Amino acid sequence: MYTDGFPKTLNEQIDIIWDTLIDGTYSIKDSNNNIILYDSDVLGYLQQRYGCYKTQADFTNLWRLYNALHLADFQKAWAAWTAEYNPLENYNGIETNVRQYMDGDETETITHGKTTTNSTGAGGIVTVTQVTTFDSTTPRDDTKTTNTGTTTATDSGTTTTGKVKSAKNLTVGETTYTADKIEAETNTRHGNLGVTTSQQMITSETEMRMNPITMLYLDTFVSEYCYYVSSMWGCCE
Image 1 (tube, rainbow, N blue to C red):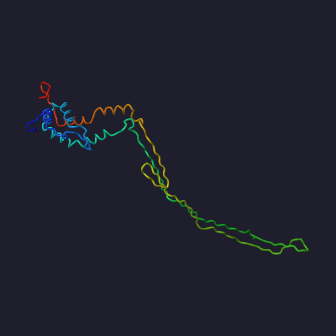
Image 2 (spheres, rainbow, N blue to C red):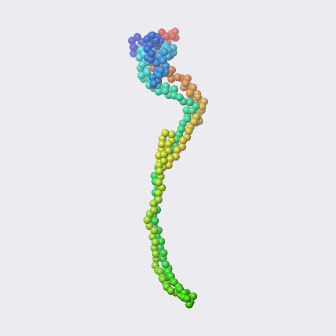
Image 3 (cartoon, one colour):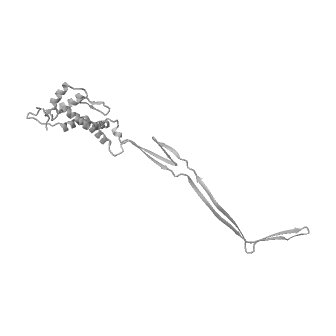
């Protein structure tokens, strides 16, 4: 389905646009509204590289539609593209392991149940007191006591002992941990960890930088909304 007066080449349409250009209509901006490519850059690139390509509708309307569908994603990609980082240290990182122990107070209870029994022999315990007189140094019995039976001593009751644990605080980075016992271990990773060689990281960085996403954004517009038909002379009609 063709729009009246179309198809037209980009050359035809952009030549007219130059005469009535209003700044900002065709520029590409980031999410902060900063200009990445000015109108003249966008139009100049499309005209020089795709001037002979045709559209079936007005270029300006197609460009607005394309931005409505794709600009937000482009801006996120642009933010990632321009983020500051060192490609040779993109594996840097800090890993923190925290172990917390919250056992509470310790209590130990000892129950006493010892019973001691003393038993006399069959003849009992005999206690004899002997005395002497002034006229005889030979001892003779004075009193005699005999104890028989058993005696019992019982130790009963309980004893409770305890250890009170107070919680401690430990700050690791920006986080504070509280527990009876806290152990923290921080491991810092730096540079190439052997997953990818430095040469491979440099090569990937070079390939990315040599294919700018601004060019990809403009090329994608052409692939979605424009088409090329060559004449017998190999130039635009």
